Amino acid sequence: MRGVTDSAPDLPPPWTPRQRGAWYRGISVAALILAALSWLLARLIWLPFLFGLFFFLVAGLIAGAVGFRLAKPARPVPPVRIRVAVVVLSLFATVLTVLFEFRHFRDIAIGDPPRFADARNAVVAAGGSLKDLSARAANAFEKALSNHWPPGGTGGYILWSIRSGSLPIEVDGHTEKVVTTHSGILWPGRTLLAAVLIAAGLWAGLESLRSATPVNNILPLGEEYIEDDG
Image (tube, rainbow, N blue to C red; front, side, top):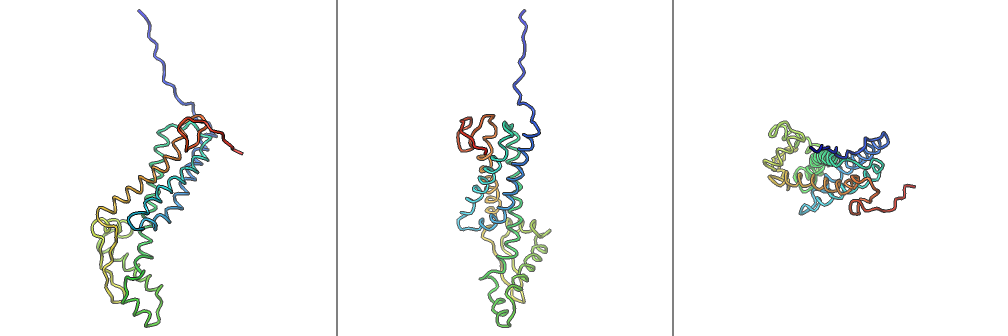
């Protein structure tokens, strides 16, 4: 009777402190880049025909490229670790973008012309401040969200965008219906697509870390290239 020996699967060697430090340094810097870009993405999302979604892919590519550069000493990185990092980073960036989107809509978009034209004319005629008018409009919008779409704030803004997208606001005795162009199924659809595009850009930048051999993140996996770490 012939003996049978089971060969254990090849497991990656345990990470050294240098590899672990490089990995977390790369991912941390990628998170900081996404956090900084989220402020801009929250404004670009309003470009016509959803053209602003293109910049979510660009943001992921930028953060992924920098993260790849810093995390190269950690190779080879287990694929599951890269996938988890991509998901966490894309969700992190999406949440921040939504927070900034609400603040942008409340603080800037609500008080911008042509909204509240009558109230604006009355303020100008009285020699008042249009900046103060914008602040009152922002406060009125946030109060209306709290009253009609509790709990208000960012959560109320999300509910309002999905379920209505229209809300009457009163400022200085003048009432106007505030409407968002991203309402109904469009809001969650474009927000989900934005998260997917960020994740795609991150994956394109970080996936080459799976290889133990020096690779460039724009070359096929495993193809060597000359590195200049100087």
